[in-house]
Image (cartoon, rainbow, N blue to C red; front, side, top):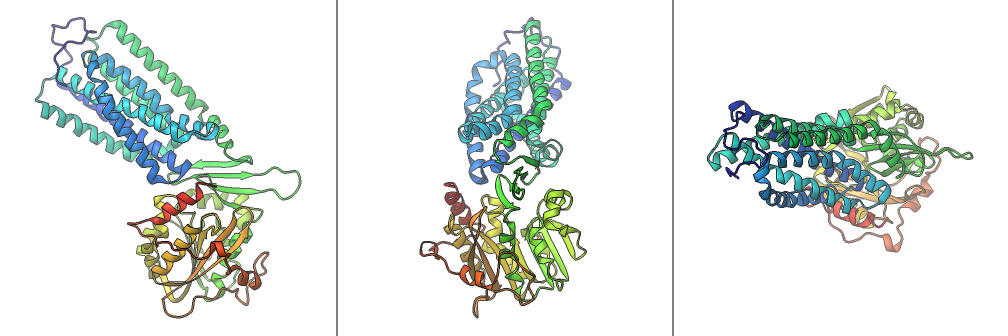
Length: 532
């Protein structure tokens, strides 16, 4: 790392380079800072994309980080012979890293959409990017020592201090700046361009007197070529993304956006006969079909509103379809809707197909919409509600698994009155029976009496719900409709009576409750749904 062997590209090896100055050292450390920030953004982009496309964020993060760290070690060893040509080698590494990292999201998205080989592609891309990141440090250390000789410990301390600060800035810029401003695909391309400029121009400028002209011209031409490729892909990114995304959906996409929290896609069929089918997908998972969503939302909302209902809390349900059903009761005085993603509630309020479906529910003066994490919001909630409707997506990642934990349902009791009713969507008792019964077990473990039931929603298949009320003494809450329930298209008392009967092969199973420290619901959901 501290070798004094002259660079073979130098034209005056015996002459101390003029660039060995405080200013040159600052510029090189600044290059380290930028390259470290870019490297961490690549890592975060790969893990975020895997969570969006595949779910199971713990597995995606583990695979990406493990492969990249291993590859970084391999890259560090592979860079040892290159230290004698450190200037040219480092610039070449940065050119390749800018190209690989900048195109990484595009390559993986295309692999997922068209080739259906996402996991092997993710391993290969993570290894290549990690290999190049690992080669940076030995080469940078050599360049630092050429500017000014230091004790090994001091040089390492300076290098890693700047490297870690760069990683901090990159980690913060990814969710706060890059995703909101550019999205994942364009964000990676922008970072690749910064990486190329920081890694090539800065180093070649500092060591311009030590590097032969042909080497400088070649590396600058390579950088220009990479920037041209990244710029061209950036210009075509929207078309590429739309084309690739459309491969994943049967019907034409009428709206798509990637937010810091999820990937939102709305499709609509163009059938010449019958009713058009509008569908909402979050991270690729179907949330509703306009053809039969009323079945799901009637089953989710109306049994919970069979008792007191002057104040209602809805957790999740940013599409406002559950809210629509709640507002059909004139004696509901106030509704608080808490959904994490402001883009989802904005879409429900302004996007014509959704606004038509939800009956402009978010414009009702009785409604207060809050964009917040439900878990944290419950900690500070100051009022109590008669009814709570919980309409979260299925718990296929760690962020959602905490919303199906014993701790979450304990927090929920802070906003309940003694006789409040809580409704929880529980997934499919047919396709994911362990997941469904784990949710029911978790609610009971938190100190609720529960009534489990199921209905058929053609777009989803068999779907289950859990009606609960706080307290362990007394009978489970009755499954019924209010006497003054509005006219419903699907649900009546006879359907509800039948809904509590589960077939023999889908009756309660011996499963564990899910907690923050032991999120078994994530394991159940991942294992059961991977076959469908």
